[in-house]
Image 1 (cartoon, rainbow, N blue to C red):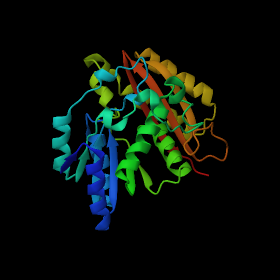
Image 2 (cartoon, rainbow, N blue to C red; image 1 turned 90 degrees about the vertical axis):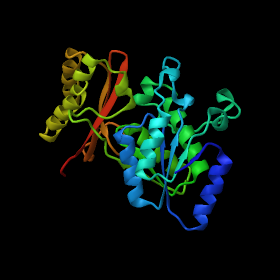
Image 3 (tube, rainbow, N blue to C red; image 1 turned 120 degrees about the vertical axis):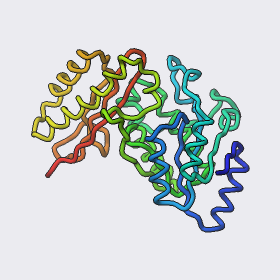
Image 4 (cartoon, one colour; image 1 turned 60 degrees about the vertical axis):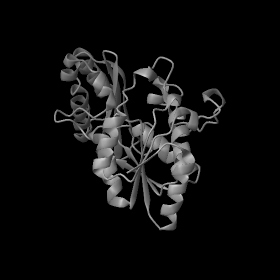
Length: 284
């Protein structure tokens, strides 16, 4: 596995692969890798000749009340896991390489509409930071394919919209969420949960499944269903940020014609903010 930190060396390696006619897949991460990340790599390896992974903790997507310094850094373990999976190149740039003129002077990319709703309303500027770094990494790696987890469902839609709007020559794949045995979506944030909170955390997914069951049985009183779900989560110790039932295609309120629905949620357990979602395919 090549480990490269500078952009010029990355581009030179990319040029050699391109001359050899290799199909290149890319998995951008912030490190602290778990099985969800590694599953993205496995899916990428099925569809491409070459797999590139990046590890970069992006300061531009952290809000003023979010502790960038506390984000877990496990580079040694991450390298070992990626090498074992047969990743071809690990890109580990520094913040100075990525934001050479500083964050305040950085040109940014922002996807209107999608970036301002749901999680975007709770975390202003977050998706601007995500779109900007992903756009920059796409320009550096120039992949043919890119892979993202469906746990961050809104993020996936933002990136797909950016790729379409900016006429980028690559295909974006969403990969289903990987879960612990008790249903909790795998996330680096799970490391922040206390022992008692960890026991409660799977209730988020279980309650979203309950909402899904109601909708599949024909209930359409969405406001009432959401209120019931919030009450149950609050009762077991969550502080709910939002629960939304949206069209999976547009993230707008679903209409009668929408058959692909997504239930999205964010909730705090102590200081840890967990997100999750469940998708439903309704019969016409």
